Length: 114
Length: 115
Image 1 (cartoon, rainbow over the protein chains, first blue to last red):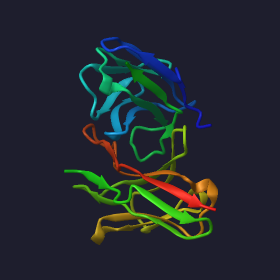
Image 2: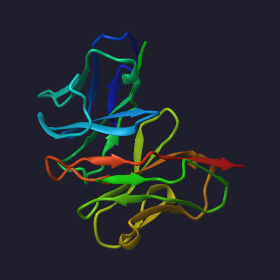
Image 3: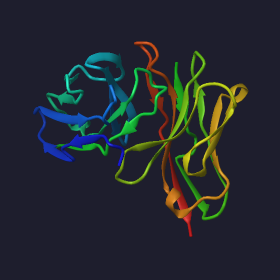
Image 4: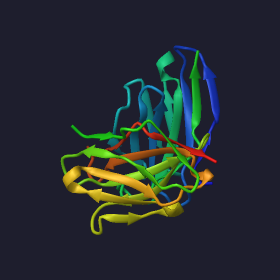
């Protein structure tokens, strides 16, 4: 158990809909990262937040957004969903700002868009 | 452009045999290199990382990796694999030191263990 929790574990929704994925980092970790893992794209970094502020941006679509709240939990919002958004979404957390710190991954949320 | 290549999609070894998983990278600056393992149905776990210093890095679960700058490689090794090592292994390069930095993962190598 990494100490990072993600809810829900599974999510099935229809195209065009909007969903919110939630992540609670390990106690004491200030950075939260979001990743998308799919068969065709592999594992891709989406976005990083540090202590409530956006820190780094990867391959995140404009239809996707994220935020980190004062209690440090984070949410990833996916809107206007398309079939291609079906994937496993991971959240990770680390103590500090830089990726040199070990990232602890949650178990993921599997999103299926039908 | 920054990239990570894991040339082997699948590797099968016998239990007790040695293992080497290949990773080649392309990165403009001095790279930060990582190996992660993903067991079925689980998130990723860091095996080891390299930033500087000794080019032979020891990790958890008996794994080690060697950074070879001249070959742009960071291969993962284990002298004797166990059935529990069956998983997918990801090499990654990058950092988050600057705002535009990011981490790039290879496509992964799935390791199968023969009894």
